[in-house]
Image (cartoon, rainbow, N blue to C red; front, side, top):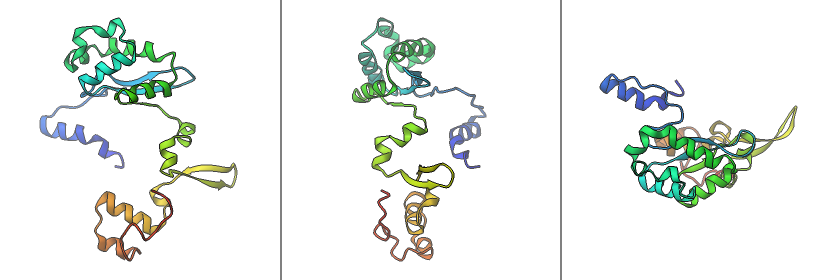
Length: 193
């Protein structure tokens, strides 16, 4: 039940047309290419998604405009989609000797959606998560000091209710009844945001 929201497209499509969607790995029916590509280092990958034809042109430029990518058919989504295997092989050859962070940085700078695939260690040093105060230090009884993700249930009650109200449109009357007399952002300042 907790992941049913991820099936919304499949449920609507089946309800409307009777079509049963099949597994497509990392591919996306609205993007080509769209996948994760091996990079230098042990188990290092970069996710890349080309949603627009202009992004394909920018990806080509960042890769150094290799001969294989100049095929005129690749200029459009309709031309790229049926040849994703070929395109992914070319991209994989380009990403293989590069660090995932370098690939992502170059592509992001050019306006192509890309991001390194992170493990738990990477997440703890991610600048965006650090800026948002996503992790806090706790003292674990067995392993000692460690970082733990701030989750909604770990926040003090007034902040949880504020987030519920803003994200899930919970009525103010419910928030007030749970302890926040003002139902506002100023009731609890713990630096979470």
